[in-house]
Length: 178
Length: 122
Image (tube, rainbow over all chains, first blue to last red; front, side, top):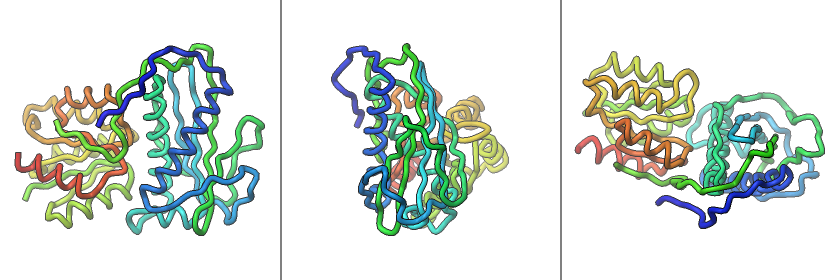
């Protein structure tokens, strides 16, 4: 089933407004992504310390007219392992999760009339990985059974960035045969 | 039984698809990106279907699809795109290039197997 939103008004959102929108979309997207692989996440206060150290991070860049940025998905071992559909590499799996997370964000932005192009994922292994502290990059933090999941969104927008005519999008998990 | 080629840069996804199709009685071969996928098709004429990701290094899935379908011997080779992308314009591009299906990740095993069965017997 193709999805579209109803509004076709072209808007030029401010940087903070765009950041708030993408944070809201990313929080929902991350929860639904892990849920689709059998792991329940609960969003918690960003100032909360991780219950267990982050062991892997997956980074995916994105850009579009008047917008560019990156999404970092980081997690401790158990949420990555429990969501993995096969008994395979956790590093590979967080790359795929990072890719699917940005895919979900992109699909939601398309529904709001903004197009994004995404890069292939990069995996960063290591304990306690986090971006340098910046007031404009607040992590989304999720508690999971046996660990934590983090999402950082790095984002820059230019005045030409618009939310305009919605694109049609096929939802996650759906299939079309031609 | 014809072979199904699975082209995805994620070993986890290849393994997940391989297991699902293997359990359903299909013979599965794997490729890691578009370049590898074209090599596999050129060297193994028993391949009768392709499951193809889009966002991959070296050559993405849409580029691979277009190159494969330019070869007349692959005109009837069914290709299903399996990707995190759901954008209508990309779906239309794949359809114009000759793809027979589009599935947005995460996929349901029964949906994928059903689509492969339907296209393999069409």
